[in-house]
Amino acid sequence: MIRLPALLLIVTLVSSMQEMLQDYRLQLRANSLYEKRDYGNAESTLRQLLSTLPEGRKKTATTFNLACTLYMQGKFAEASAMFAHKPKTAGKDHDIELKSMFNESNSLARNAIGTNAKSSKTVLFRRSLDRLKSVLLNNPNDGDAKINYEIVRRYLHELETPPHSSSSSTGNNSNTEPKSGISQDMAQRLLEHTQQDESSLMRQLPRNKSTAAKSGSNNLDW
View 1: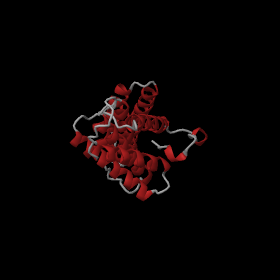
View 2: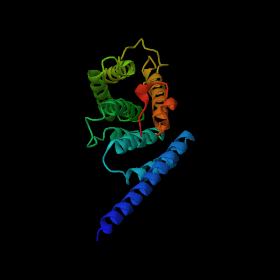
View 3: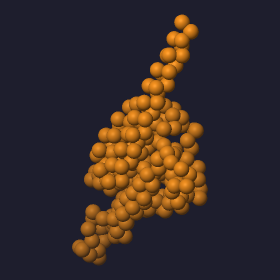
């Protein structure tokens, strides 16, 4: 009778260690697949990992990284919803929340760029702008958020401003893109920045402190 609780404890510890080892292997596999730009398989691996994790920082980080893989596949609507997910640990991971809001804004903007309906496009850009406002309210010194805010604001302004029906206008200008060409610039900027941001986040696995990435603000501990 005395040994039974100890046996139960040992079995529980072994089971827990096996689960931890399995989770770690899934993390390594997801990271490797992401580095190879095999985002589809990275997504399925992260979904498998996510289904086994309890609520906590690791699940929050995995949810974030899953949203990154969705973004890299061009699944912007699903990515924005995933970035917007509020875990039960909300408030404890303020840095992750800000990164999620920034990337949610990027996802919404990219989704807007690929949307044809003007009404839907406008709604998406407004939501994107709103997320950037939240980021800047929490961190007024965020330079990337400031730049993206101005880009989205200008694009939204051009979208909502009625076109001039001047007879002196040349017929060479296309109505599908503003004169400034900001839509193309915006798409390129948002994509390039998010690729850099998310790649560094996905690379971060449990390891020695000496292997930390250059910018601590963009690192996410698994």
